[in-house]
Length: 324
Image (cartoon, rainbow, N blue to C red; front, top):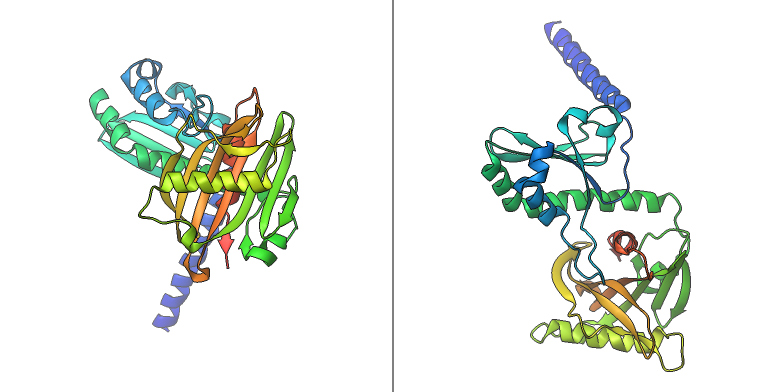
């Protein structure tokens, strides 16, 4: 009898906890905010001083691979005394507080989904030190959240074309606003018209021997890009086609996509024999199982407007990739 009473008590406690968790989920409002907007909760005098300068240098630094300076995140300063009500619902929040030195990352503190990063220190020097030492972690935390949010928005209206998966064994979630502009020889060109131009996604495969890791990777990648552009991406006039801008060396990083070693390349494209250019982001994924590389590249043509968010959408689409 005592065991039964104990078991019943445990079950009641578990049910109570579950109900409380569900209740907490229900009362949290939906988070809001434009993509890549970051609310910075900090007193005016600190924002105007060295801490604000360090935050701007770190979180609003120019994004690699764009033709003009655009910040990694758009920062909006909020004094602590007005950080109440709906202001707390922003999806990305960074708070500066006085206290024991450290960086805390909190999920869904005021809304859902949400990331709150709290940076603290006993004085200005300690806070600046925490920002600089943890910059990589802070940036990756916010960026991962924004990638997830962008993918959620894309998922509301997915393109139902399955040829990419059928022909290449590659699944990428892209919105119904995109259309397949070219499908030939296992090369796919997917594009979307925007008010000022268009955004594009290229997906194709390369034999594993196409890239020799002991040689200059950038030179090899540029050569491959230019040959693909000449073959598949014509420009507006006869003899014109997309190439890599020679005046700006692309940025090369190593990362992981779909649990596979990947080269990430950011740079500027232009059109040979024509006046067109824009940013691109390319992922070259090593698919050892199928003895090949899968290349997924996004590029945008949007003259006279900011391009960060267009490229970010393409990045979010590519990062949904699954290779069979």
